[in-house]
Image (tube, rainbow, N blue to C red):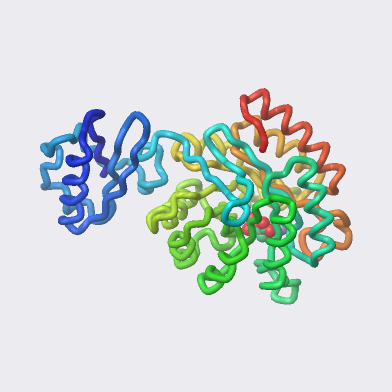
Length: 344
Ligand code: PEP
Ligand code: MN
């Protein structure tokens, strides 16, 4: 249920309403926008049916929620959410949403300091905002390289921060959250973990932003319900990522659902970015799909880059080389300008 307050409602009226909701054993989520104050009620809505909240001073309208996800819905929060990712506690910031577009780039896995530093310098000079790299890798085979673990996290943070770049890395298990939080500026929840609800709750209790990737067999509704888990724990900084879904098509790694960008943006206030690397698995398709993403209104792009893809320890076949990435960034900046946005 959503309660819309009158434009001239007072703080006292808002406090009384919030207290009444809590008295009923429900949780109240306050969203104070420039134009409107809205209260989302979370919990068993039946408890509210018989309550004449409409009659409380300051209340304009009590609306039943039409979507199964509440906090993630635009009904609840009409303005775009801007997610800010900061390098360390007071380093440079990168933003997604509300007209801000950013590029996340880097290797699939952290392989060592020298390799990462070379990739990082190249993506930074091309215009990437955030450095990525996996220290815990969700590999299909248990015999494939599983990532460097904590030493990798330290390398990622040191390399990224020395260049003034915030860093994002995947966390696969609720037990890893505290460790990853010490080094990363943004948590990545991978496609295979999009419905690991304990993990979603755990990052929801942190105050660092979350990059939530769409599961390979997940609908847009499933994705938004997973975001709801994070939001409902109090972390409002969620960026959604379309990275392709499984279909009968086997000439690409997955099938990129580009319509998900405007589709999600219509239903949710959260920023949406596109990962054409994992969606297509093909370097020849990554630049055109990145351009299509920005043209479709995406709030950012996520691309894997490696200086020597032939030697990469994971996903080398889909990595762009630095010169290809540099050329891509030039065209993305031009397209962003056409849609009234700037990369930073
Ligand atoms: C990755 O970003 O390296 C990754 C494993 O992505 P996904 O979870 O989308 O497969
Ligand atoms: Mn990868």
